[in-house]
Image (cartoon, rainbow, N blue to C red; front, side, top):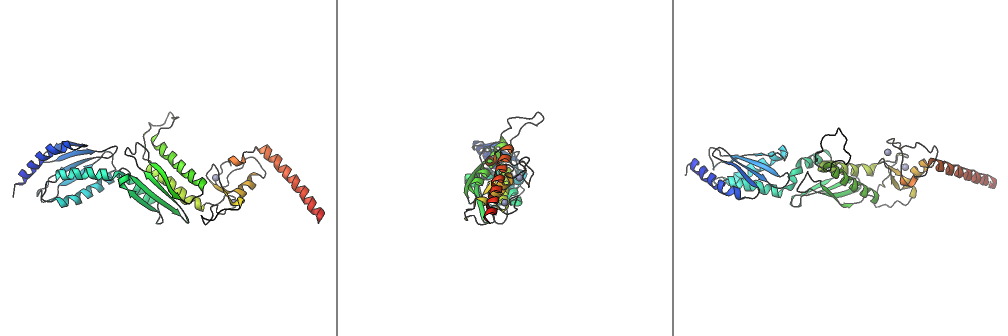
Length: 327
Ligand SMILES: [Zn+2]
Ligand SMILES: [Zn+2]
């Protein structure tokens, strides 16, 4: 059997020759005590591998440590464990180049590792057993199907190569929500993602310099919370649910149709109409949040509403008199 030192020095010579030729790999050291190479793909997928030869090398796995300034520590730890498992298959072989190539392939095949902490946090804090999540590493997509009672929405996140400097993309796949809310959710989610990476146009003088923020968690949090919240929301006026129990059941009664106000609360059209069109006409607020009621359908001025109400009351009195007369 060849001497361990001879085996190592011959392997180091091979590493010095081969490693610098691999795209994205910078060999920083290749000496007896340490081999260090940085593997840099696009954006945040940059990792430094530090390897040391154990006493029984190559009959023992090479000792590996991964460091990254861009990937979360937990992610590095997880990849390290995977590398350690893999290296057990390489006993008796030259392991340094195998390891460098393995880490590079891992980064290529797992683009979602840049947001894995966020994805984990979503799973732990936001999802219930009714919800599903599918990671599609090959296309850098995450598919969420979020359910609340009989309602569901399935959306896809596309994590760009430059993440988190560029924001995550949100696409709606399937849903059975009322059309008006669907548009609302997705456009608001896109806006949340945009704000994570684009500085505000009007900067306040005391604000710290803008830095792009990861957008996966804020976007998914908003969507999951909205999908869970709206189907069970009650009308602030009559305290009954606004969504029909069954999504397939059409709302034929106009008074039961839903209206979403600027404050975000859902009302029955009939309840809101009655509330807005009866005095007092000024200072109407949402009973749930105290915000002023504002809706495009009720843009009448208080004076006009006052006049109309008086007119209606007069008509009602006339009608009442007619009824009295007929009795
Ligand atoms: Zn109501
Ligand atoms: Zn409100």
